Length: 59
Image (cartoon, rainbow, N blue to C red):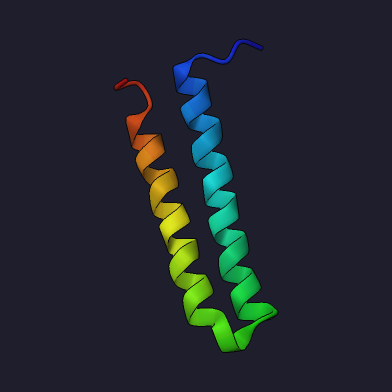
């Protein structure tokens, strides 16, 4: 399995999206007092993953 630039961006965007979803769920289910902060950070992770996915094939 060779990791070229496109596959690295694909894996990075996948991992960042998973981390964002995990943070949102963690905030909603386990720490409801801090759900707003967890959700904002989770959405930020998802946005960065989306940007990495958009960079695939352009760099």
